[in-house]
Length: 226
Image (cartoon, rainbow, N blue to C red; front, side, top):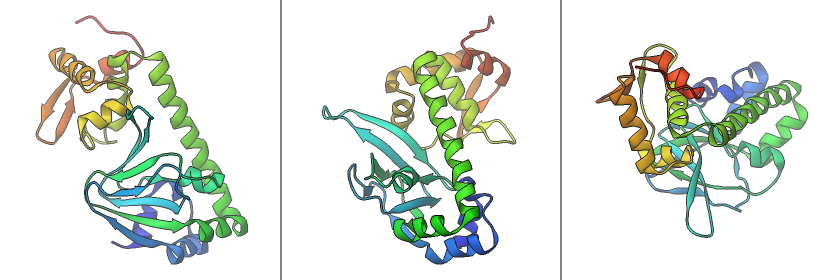
């Protein structure tokens, strides 16, 4: 795993190049985690910005009742803990490796020093944080304005690759259900309904979208006639 390659694959730092990229590479350190290992806990000091190189990380909140809500499933090329670092506050959630994972860590002190000194990096982070806020607003819109079927349809459309129709579901279905604010049973029913309507089918590698246009209608709140 080359640190420069991991940075190149990360959308959060996609426009950073030249001396700025080299500075990030110099400060970066590799962290390896076993399946089920807790990376940090809610309230811990933010260790830095993490970039997932391989594996899958679950970022989640835990209520006093013990109920969990998955905020983020971070796969290769995705970041986490960046908000706590930039806001200079403790980690607001837990992070756990759902499978054996490798991450690149940009330590808080070195990263913030670079941010204060490097204009290009500051502009990139502003742009990336704007996209993060847009994603958060979209998630809240899903939870408040869409029913279960609409949330699942929207999730599948967002998760599909740019080329092709196969969707590989990250982690266990219960984590996806939590992320969508659904129970596992409700997620299963929604997927079954979409299969029955021949909009998706199950494959060994995950799910295959058969009718994207009808899924888009459902994601917008309209269940099309057969």
